[in-house]
Image 1 (cartoon, rainbow, N blue to C red):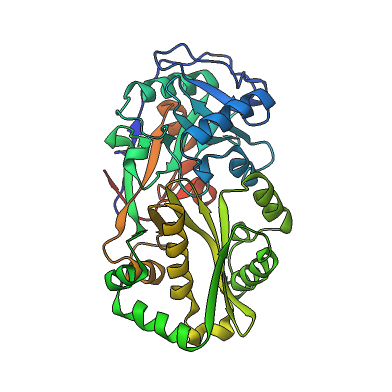
Image 2 (image 1 turned 90 degrees about the horizontal axis):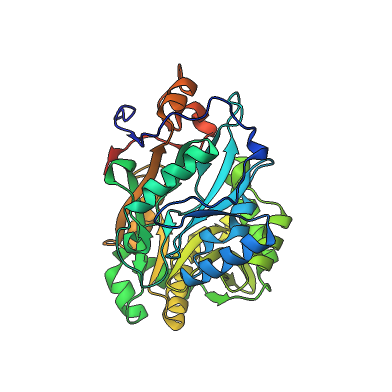
Length: 380
């Protein structure tokens, strides 16, 4: 394991005020006087939320950048905000109070993929953005910031390379001209499993309706139970009800049936340009029929019909594990770097908080319950 403690990017700021303000009294919506016109939007304020949603649509309707998506994963006391600029950049964050550090906060990006989303067709590195973010952090007493970077570099404003850490890969299935081209590009075992599923009577439908939502919830819950998944991977019905309500038009259900019985299901999120494998599960009684590859082929077909260019499968729990290898089989040349943004915005405070902490996570003072566990990595 590489020790990246000393290599972590540290955006140097002037010393902060001697008197700290309690985090619940900070002026969340205050603009920052910078050349970017950067300001923060609070999802809890109707006027800010309206601006956020306009910027979200302009950035291609990325599901992870929607304010409701951030709220779905927020803990009590968290503030769901987005940084935005005159140029329309949108960076969703969740601000969290740091235990034992009065008024001090850290920021973490959305579950899934984050970063500073740029409007569709916008260009340029905009290096001044990160200076503006540092100024915002100083004003709001934000010690560190963490985010899992979006896999398509040209769709987010790239931070300084010293702030990025290579973690693993994200597998992306490019939507080719037809199913035959996709299967020809996939591993031989994928083609074999697709034939097995068809021979065993597996049928797949992809729909934006909620007709299959209950079946998905049942299959997903049973899968999490079988795997002994952590509580963070288990969701109550209220979670899905809100997702259906607030992200309508940004998701579909892919459902595989056998003899009329649902045997595999996947909740797919999508933007105007990309689809994302979000949550899924399979009935263990159908394992021998190999429904998953046929289901994914159907999602690719749906993407093609919608004009969506890529189907993002994600990566594994650890680099090179069985989950990653399974996804690579469907897109052998589709591995993209998976990087995390790790900013230390107040080096003095971060050092104080991290004294005696293991350095296997970022930020170190959060430990394994923090923004992201670091098991391996190197600076980009």
